[in-house]
Image (cartoon, rainbow, N blue to C red):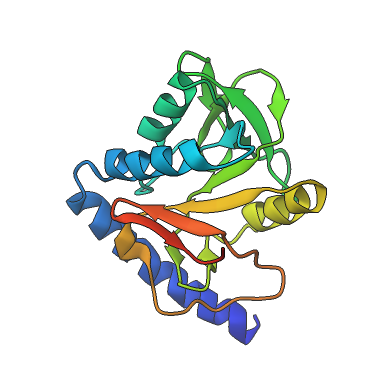
Length: 192
């Protein structure tokens, strides 16, 4: 195992514990973050297709944002893992779509059309002020962000508790930076 892999493993363990504490203490954080997102999306040009996610473990609840965005006419999708070491695909989601168990415990739409999002809301374990994101280590979001950005302008925004911010994260050249992070405290821009 490389030095960076060992560092990432240690950071993941600590970040998981920090996020769990934030999750247990943060009543209404998902709704507060959703309000910040809605304000930002209202002024964002060319955003029509938005990928949320089905929260697992102690991830901040993005569902209030997804419901509100859907009610405002945005096309919402959720990520689907189709195979190991591949980019995610994004299947259309509505509040009444039939959901089934997907890989890693996340629910996914049983069927539906595939979207190519203009905006990805990315769950995570930790983030830093330079826009680095720490996920679970599968590289699904990194491959997806890189692939989507190669095809069209796409914003990758983290959706997290403010307590998940760390000073700096170990990273590799394949790790994709976020364009910003939305928390219950507001929007933290890493890149303009």
